[in-house]
Image 1 (cartoon, helix red, strand yellow):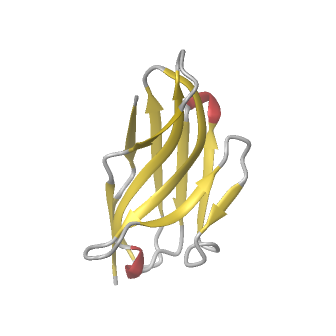
Image 2: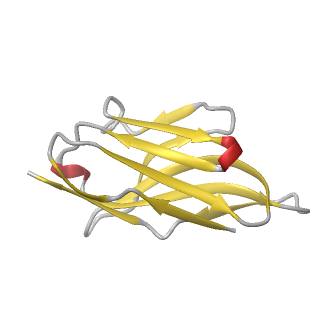
Length: 120
């Protein structure tokens, strides 16, 4: 199983980016998915999560600007980021709880990370 992210890049303050993360491999079921970020010199922090049924949760710092969504048929999660500010600059990581085929245990998987840089 692997998670592959895309969509990061450099954007000016006030701009938008859309991140995507697709899970692939011998997947039986994908449970909750989410996005985390880690700025230089800081700890990794939660950005937003979404359950398999579509219930979402997001950090207060992004609640009115970022939207998480998913396409269960494609095992893909998205993060629409609007009104970006320099403080959003970080490496963004995708996370998913996945039960592999023919198993019953859930394991946590992480993407490789994608850089988002917001210039002032």
